[in-house]
Image (cartoon, rainbow, N blue to C red; front, side):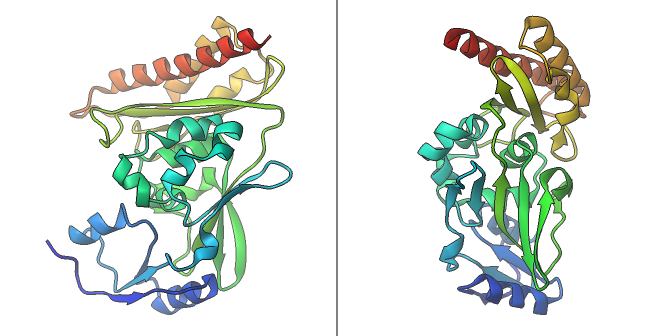
Length: 291
């Protein structure tokens, strides 16, 4: 099937892109990596009157650490850039473990981090990591910039908090207070398949004590599930077997899976508990070796 007819724009500045979006009255779609949008166009699940291709806005192609440790990821940063980034490997273990599990190698060469987050797929990897890491999306529109907490950004399946005339220009992840620890695990039937269940965990630690705990789930609900409150039972604790068990139980209870061809709801909830246990146990063992 071929896409419906659409007008095409290729702006070279953020201001130009926003002006086009503003004039569109909500009938335009932004193209960055296109790994989600192009298939939707071909299947006519999306039929915008206008396509705004931002790939010539080269100022949006970056990821960097600020002096205070804040991570900034521009709207044209590709999955592959993060997968092989020394910055990510050294500073953000949750992102580092997720990067090689996003879709497949072909998609990772073109797809973008911010575009994936904006797509708000309930099975998307990056939205889960952003929630676990207490990240924010920077949106820019005719009235300037605003920051949207990731916990509020994904409002439903394939639905986000952007206005029609706003462009998501950057993802921001605050620095860890202490040591950053974390992980990401994903169950998929084959490489590139939608996740049966995914778990992102991010901890800040002072010595062997957890000072902040974040967690989010993908594939086990109608949208990315914020499990930060559930895993907060770890705050102020060391990662004993009892603490890990309590956290895994709490996070599994926060999942909202349904039975389908990938497994029963009980099975998916069991996978969530198992993954949380594996990630936290791995962190605990690493801390014991470092002591």
